[in-house]
Amino acid sequence: MTVPSDTLFSMEPEDSGSDGTRPPTPRPRAVTRPPVGPAALDPVIASRASQLSRQIRLGTSSWSFPGWRGLVWDRESSESTLARSGLPAYAAHPLLRCVGIDKTFYRPPVAADLAAMAKQVPEDFRFLMKVPESVVSPSPRHGASRFLDAAYATNEVVAPFIEGLASRGGPLLFQFPPLGIRTGEAAARVVDSIGEFLARLPSGPLYAVEVRDRLLLGESYRSRLRTAGVVHCYSVHPSMPSPLEQARACPPEPGTPMVCRWMLHGGQTYEDAVDRYEPFDRLVDPDERSRHEFAAMLERAAGQGRDCFLIANNKAEGSAPITLALLAEAILARGDHPAVA
Image (cartoon, rainbow, N blue to C red; front, side, top):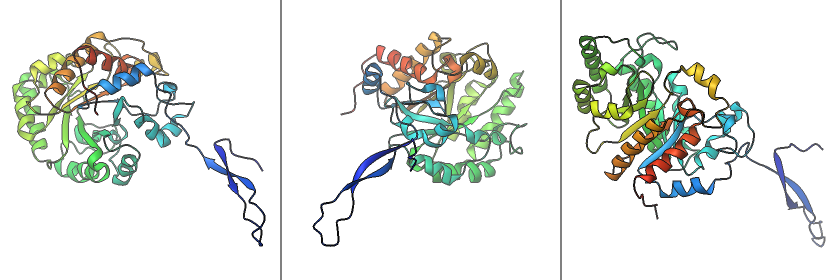
């Protein structure tokens, strides 16, 4: 008999004879092992994770990257295997307490799929989910346009998000593309439209807005978000000012969560970054400015008792897990963070 390579063996006794006198004879019983497990943890990173404030959740933009072997995964695995079976191993990493769900940008979420993900992670884990492109873009590449359609967003996005992820739902992200805004008047019109849309969404989730037009930032934008109970997502992207510059233009409201995304190194397209950084197993272009700005913002917010979420992309510096390990070091360098007892 050929034994599958992904099985282990334990010994199981055979049935005793009919007279009950023959001692049981062990026989092998196949035990299936997980397709992928967590990597052995670097003691330095484990120490950083234990010291980091529990208010701060760090995570990556999706998780199905084979190049993270030794960083997140314990063995070589295909992208499809990781997408299907890698989430429990990812969530076992003590520094990775949230993750981005990117596939919902291309098609609406399905509550059952989200619920299946939620069952694979600890109670304290959180998901940041992208809203479909059809809702945030007037000219989507994926799906028919439902641009700023609050009824559609409520029924087809918010409802599955709440039903599927339940308590493990973190930020629900509206990532608006570059809208080509050139004047203050155009920016004011867009801000009003976005604000009216957000005001029609049901309360409950943590809504976050990420924009790619710097002219949108300002008091009117901040006021609209505040009125709707929505937070700005502070991002690193070539189209936007630095995180601290965004915070000066749109200061976080007292007591609100902080949502951040470290997406793309300056001067590159996503396609160029993929070619430059694959297989995402090392730092290629360190971005010290963004690291120290985010460290300052997160350390301050956590010190105020605010929940913080930061998602890092492989295209930020070359390897999202390494980016987060260095960010944790930078945060801890700014002050002491007690470990949870």
